[in-house]
Amino acid sequence: MRELITPPDAILDPSTGAARVGSYRGDLPRVDPALLAPRRLDRLLKHKRWVYVGIASDEVFVAVAVVHLGYLSIAFSVVFDKAGRRLLVDRAAFGPPFAASVGDATGEGRSARVWLPRARVRIERPRTDATTAVTAALRGVELEARLDGRAAPPALSAIAQASDGFLITTEKRLLLGVEGEASVLGRRISLDGAIASYDYTGGLLRRRTTWRWALALGRAESGERVGLNLGEGFVGDAECAIWIDGELIPLAEGRFTFDAARPLDPWRVRTADGAVDLRFVPGAAHSNHTNVGLLASEFMQPIGLYSGTIRLPDGRLLELRDVLGVTEDQDITW
Image 1: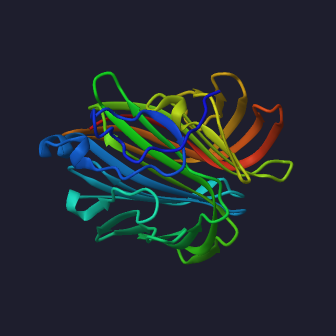
Image 2: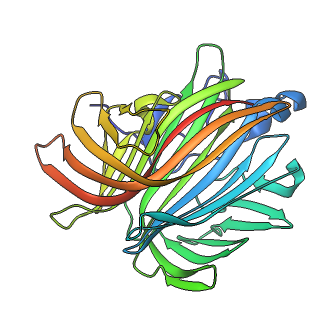
């Protein structure tokens, strides 16, 4: 199993210009797009970045995202009802690039915003503050929440580079405390005591990019707070880990078995070494199927419940039963 080390002070080595590839315990350094891609046209066409926040309570799973593709901005939010296993709200909005911003910082000082007529999202963590404020207003859903990282385990950060020079950075923070409220079609839902995740991803990405992803947030049957992040492709095992109460433990790369023609049928989510073996039962899905100009996207993000087992490196066995989360199948040309 790989070892997580202290993050570097810069994404690129200042003496060689080489990416400091690795899997790290802690926040990424500042991601400066001008250093990653000195040419403005490359930044416009190749530099992609996004922030995704997931919140799981006893009642609902709430997600909100800000996406900047260089030439296009996107915001979306979903609210999934656990008992009814259905989406209460599924909203997305698209706009020009100047309508969104995703900052260069991932820790203190981080910021992601969208300002569109039908979608306003702000995700901010001021400097010297351990909490991240999340506000969102899309048709039928309003969210006001604070994500508290003071008692959370460290972030998992990764820097990856393909042989053709494309560079990816990502930071995952799970098991954040939550205070706040969602208003969904006039219904007020308390998020106090929920568990949250924060996901920053950015870099110079291939024209066609594919991946599969899994996120789970909740409690094991033995009572521990558990957060799981798995990926297949894209960054590989560098972004795969489990958070258990105060621990951050790296995992092998994810493996996903599902019927792409029937994405709401059960999925099997495992790791390459078999330590994670979960059954994911979707209740609904947020999706996007676009083929316009530069953008062709086949994006499916089912939301539902995880059950199964996770064998930890020290031999402990965690059992999950009906833990909220998402899977994702992404094939995008951008």
